Length: 341
Image 1 (cartoon, one colour):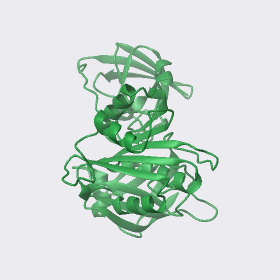
Image 2: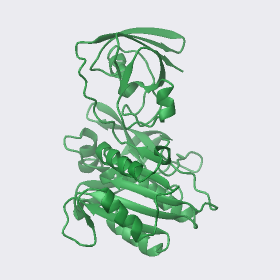
Image 3: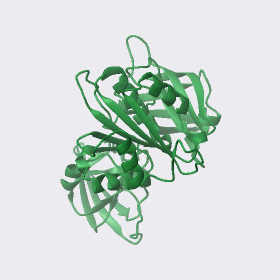
């Protein structure tokens, strides 16, 4: 589907929200709050594919919205912030992602949402849907940023908090802060204890969801585990898989890939992902985001050993059963065999 840019909103000096008209009456993109979409950007002679979470909610907005923060040397993020304009048209795929909720008016849940930086986008979508569709549920949003100037949706969150005074509660943590109304530094067990006590919450069977840099999420997960929260209760969304330190440059693995009744033989260097090397050899394997955010490239390692970057969407059970995402998976033995359905 082709989406037309209808508006561009400057959220902070470093981030914009891009609004798209959502097709027409007969053909619209359907999505769940928290999901993302793959977009193809034509930049000069290049066509570049990127995944962006919806910052809009299907329950509160008719248009589609993504919110993009500039990344230093970020090819697409800088293009979106500096060049993209109203009227431009972007090719879009279907919505994807397991980081989502299906709102239910009968729910009486306590959502504990964590966001850091632009990781607010899917969390913001989820919060809006809960407020619109689950009148008996409550949302505690804990949002970390560098400073107040960089808080995306700051005024909108204040407005939503005022309009939903008994349902939405927002706590900001700023690493650079002189304002006593905000928490200062980085998220710690002490800060989280203070926040939970403020709202008379225990670390019980709540809906814990978070999105942000891998370091932020690793730290937050560890704090929650220290407080007795089961890892299975925590749902993560990673915008980018963290880099893996690879010390196997001299390893060349014989990788066999079974896909669509075809068998491909590759010699993959230990410092290359399986998908990355397959693409360089023009082998037509399935892929979409190339960052561990979707399951398009998922396969099963039936022989050999591999290493997969953290921050992906697979559950511990899937990983233990041998499932891998080839876009973030490195060979770790002299031979590896992967089956892709």
